[in-house]
Length: 113
Length: 113
DNA sequence: ATCGTACTTTCCTGTCTAGTTAATTAACCG
DNA sequence: CGGTTAATTAACTAGACAGGAAAGTACGAT
Image 1 (tube, rainbow over the protein chains, first blue to last red):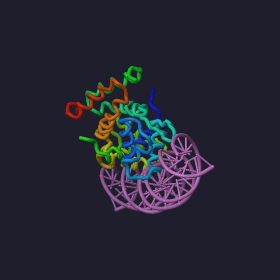
Image 2 (image 1 turned 30 degrees about the vertical axis):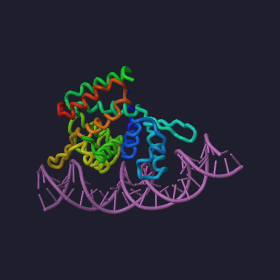
Image 3 (image 1 turned 45 degrees about the vertical axis):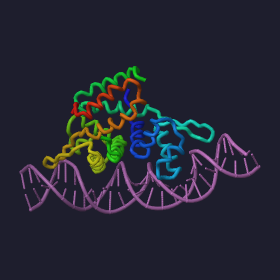
Image 4 (image 1 turned 30 degrees about the horizontal axis):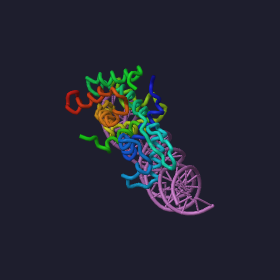
């Protein structure tokens, strides 16, 4: 089950922006509309709207429409792919990373979700 | 000890390219010169040289000069920063991620490296 | 129906990135 | 020294990307 190269590229590209990472961080505290997501930032709403679209295309968030509001929610799958990808580097991340390793095996065996 | 936002941006940007990820993967199997890194790819040497420079600036690899060869070696720190950053999302990555969590605490306590 | 709210889309700009070829630096080898 | 190998730098091009302003869409309220 290798992680798709293309998916990883999109995910990493999406994560390579401070505003988008801040949006994700905000969403760990619960759903939010695009307007709410925009609040803390000093950029226009269209700019945020585009960031949201990038995150959505990467599968990192999901948007559901309620009336004229788009509520955004975190989707964990791409982050799991990143964790899986990192397994390649476990030997370089220290000796006792067997726990991370173990976690990954569990994931692959469907024991965790 | 929060991870520097800027560092994460550079790291993710560096990882958002299939060739650069392949270079890193290659380096898990041991050091390699720029020429050796270039071999599997259908792009010019200068292109690979630039990829190497991007990885270097992100701190993901280290280059040591031996005669006219530049030997490249993996540096794990930025990947550890990514793992640390992912800790924010542990609740979204499944319930039994305490192992990952544990691993991270160990890292912060300097117990692992 | 029309107004306001909440976005999204379009268009345009400047900047960044990946790739090319050609020229350059650096080190070793005879 | 001159030549060869290894890699970087320079100069350029085509495409992606972040941002803004302005126009467009969609829904709810009145």
